[in-house]
Image (tube, rainbow, N blue to C red; front, side):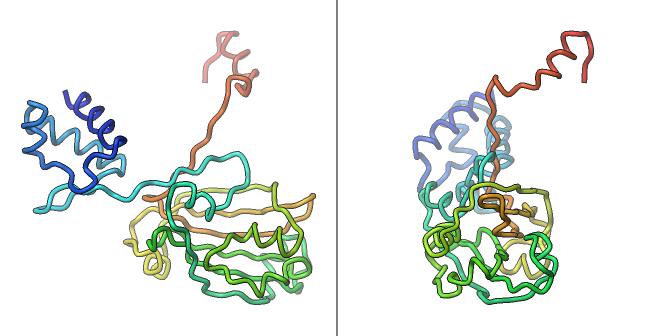
Length: 245
């Protein structure tokens, strides 16, 4: 019974119901003609999916929506937020020319090569979403030093001002817990899971950006899609041969 209630609640949420207030357990009992235990189990499942938050003495409330980011190609957080109907804005914490040997090594530059460093707190509807640190070779990215990054995307400015289009590269995503300073900036508890991301963006075979980010795990989700044509043929052959794994 709780699964039926859960499915209907998901449908109603998708239709925009409960925008003002989510029903109490007693209201769900009366509306669906189920037991209090059944109503609470459906609500608990919505909590587990990150859709609801429950506060003792106050009831259940809709949480801000989760931004789903498809994987498989380079993407812009700024554009992703806008595509989800959110107002994207950045607080620029630092924009300067620096020397950073570790970042220079990732960019295949000399250890003492000047780099453009951009540090941003990323906001969605004025709610902290992510912290970004980007390093780019100053030899190609120096024009970015004059950009106001509060309402624009790095890759847009890199293409328009520097003639460089980052379209390839790699990204590593791992779970992490915030440091005290990250927790304060992102307005989360120190035990709130985050995604820690490393990215190397390239253009025409040249490394053009090394990035380190932390993104709130309760507001962001990464989604991978695949087609039948991409199924591992070796795995199929193994299965047909009677092996398993």
